[in-house]
Image (cartoon, rainbow, N blue to C red; front, side, top):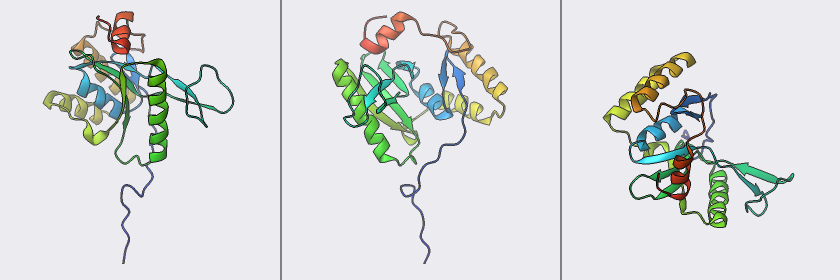
Length: 189
C-alpha cells in the first residue's frame, strides 16, 4: 500500500525569485503581478508600503524596536475606486500550508488595523482565487513565457506605456500623495 502526499501534508517551498518592476512599483513574484492585473481596473493599490513592527509574544504592534520584536509587511493595500472599501491583502499560493504563519500574520495585521482605527479589512488571497479576464490572461501568459530578466523589463515597460498611470518611472517610484491618501484613508483624489 502506497501513501500519497496531499498538498496539506507537504510544506510549500519558495523558489528563487527576483524583483519585477511594473507600474512604478516592485513585485516579488509573478503571483503578485497576476493579482495586480486582476484588480487594476476596479482598485487603486499600494504595494508593500506599510511594515508592522510587533511584539512576538503579545502580537501587538509597537512603536519602537527591541530584540524580541518581529516585522510583517502585507503585499498590497487596495481600495475600490467606486465603493472606497479597503483591503490589506497577503497573496499566497494555495499550497502554502504554514497555517501558524498565516494565523500570526492575520492577528498582527488585524491588531494593527484596530490600533490605528483604519477602515481596512485584512484578507489572504490564494492563487486559485485570482481571476483574470481574457486580456489579462494574455498579458500574464506573455510575462510567463519570457525567460530573461531583460525581457521582463522590456515587457513591463510596454505594459507601463499601455496602461499609462501618468507614465511612472520604470524603476520604483513613490506614488503621488493624493493617490496614497485615497488608498489609505479613502480621501477623494
